[in-house]
Length: 111
Image 1 (cartoon, one colour):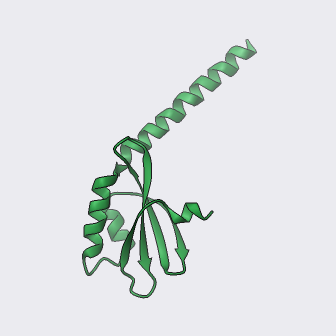
Image 2: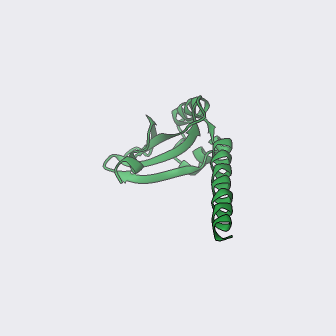
C-alpha cells in the first residue's frame, strides 16, 4: 500500500511539472519575432524605459543584473524547436539607451 501511494505521488508531481513547462513555453513569445520587435523598439529615440519595452513586447523579464557598462535585462522566448531561450538587452549606463546583445543571459551565466 505504501509503495502505491509513493508511486501515485510521483506520477502526479511528474505530470504537473510537465504542465508547468508546457504553460511556460505556451506563454513565451517566439524568439525570432521577439528579436525583431526588440531591435525595432530600441531604435526609437525614446526607448530608455525598460517597463515600456516590456509592455510593448508582452514578455516577462526573466532576470536582470548590473554590468560595468550598464544594466542587463533578459527576456524568455521559444525557438523554432520549442526550446526555451533568452534574449538580452543592455541599458547603457551613460546614454540610458538599449543595445540588443543577442541570445543568452549574462546574468545567469555569471552566477
